[in-house]
Amino acid sequence: MPTPPRSPRVPAATSRGVPPPQRRASGRPPRPPVRRKRPRWAVRAVTALSVVVLASAGIGHAVLSGLGSDITRVDAFKDMKNRPRAGDGMNVLLVGTDGRDRISEEERRKYRLGGAPCHCTDTIMIVHLSEDRERASVVSLPRDSYAETPDHTDRTTGEQHKGHPVKLNAAYAEGGPQLTIRTVEKMTRVKIDHYLEVDFTSFMKTVDVLGGVEVCTSEPLKDSHTGLDLPAGTHTLMGGQALQYVRARHLDGASDLSRMKRQQRFLAALIDRATSSGLLLNPLKFRDVTQAVLGSVRADKGFGTDEMLALGRAMRNFSPSSSEFTTVPIGQMGYAVKGVGSTLKWDPAESERIFDALREDEPLARPRPKPKGPAPVRVPVDPRQIRVQVENGTRTPGLGKRVDDALAATGFRTTKVPRNATDRAVERTVVAFDPRWDRSAKSLAAALPGSELRPVKGQGPTLKVIAGAGFEKVARVRPADPPQESGTVVRGDEVVCGKQ
Image (cartoon, rainbow, N blue to C red; front, side, top):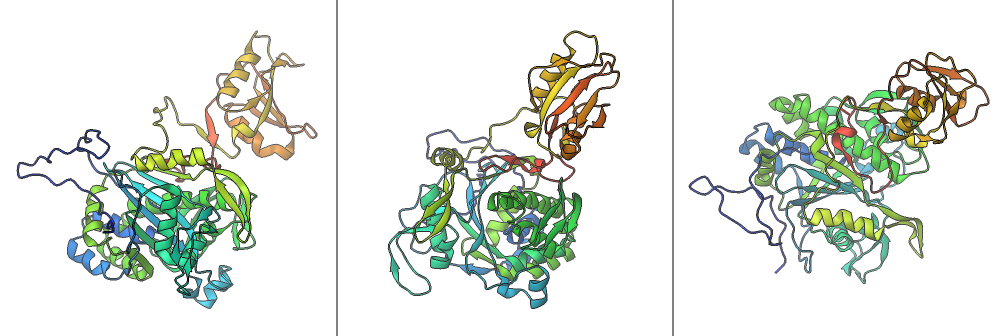
């Protein structure tokens, strides 16, 4: 008999109010009951998950029953056999399809959505909700990932296929949700419990009904393919512009990896907007949101009203720091496959570490100690990209080394060979820089409170710090944008504007 998808497990109390003792399959003792909290989900599935957030606001079972009937159901787990073992927590496969055939001609022209629909997955993420409901882990799976399908029947032609290499997003075109799930399970050995699918239309409507979502960028974002054109700063994006933001793939050489980083950033911002503004606590606004978007959501048959309500109750006090995001680690870019094209080959050891954490219900990243003192200053350029030569502009012995060590400790690439400046009577610390590297200079000056920026044409890429008598300390800094390398884990509070 096939194993049906599991419902989220919410411990039921005995008649005495105490849960019965249990042992986990791994032999480990059960975790003590804890308060359950609310997570941050994934970009395209936010429509359906808005219902979960609303449930936590106290919306009743009768209201949700009516809403659940608006969701199109798919038999995503029919006749599945030989599946991975079930772990603790719940795993949801979130899939975004392009769905441009459902968008008006005017919107297609305005937001550069021309071309025929690909009938494939535009976004693929695994969301793991921990057993104790204190953590949500989101793992993005690049659409161009090298994958091998299991044996299956082509959903268009009915033809029987042996397993063969494909790009991951092509599994949907061949076998729909079921083949997508089977392929992901084969690649990750993570059992998928629920399936949610959302298209462009529901994404845009969700953002519009919420009144827009705030995003921030430390540098201009311009993509001729999608029409995205954002200057540096903070912006409130409505539905169409938000779609351009999460779809843009031609802003830099990172292509899909850069796009997934923005999707994760936008996801955190969208859910923060939905849960902190009070909009979803208003029954009328709740009705508007759900009526506008649920018609284009597809979910497995097991994700029903009871599951929504149980999840909503379990996630009431979730915070941004309780969510974590990563992209599966890539071992080889441009891995050529005959008949498939250029793909992304996962790093076997590092990706296994990520998926093992999901299977064992463990955090993707090690717990970080709470930093002491003020929060790091957000800067436009990562300190690791800034080369610095330190000079001692005073007669104080060892000042140059002290400044060099402190800058290196906060991430700057110092020469580690400080020297004495020509002028040894400098009062105010100076950051000398070539005007071509002005953003790097501003980032360095932020680490040296009270310093003076001094442009020097022709100096080159190495910045110079002349430590003055007024030097007091080096402030901690961090890049405004989290690192985009695959495998890097960031928390929700690291990617929401103004909450870092």
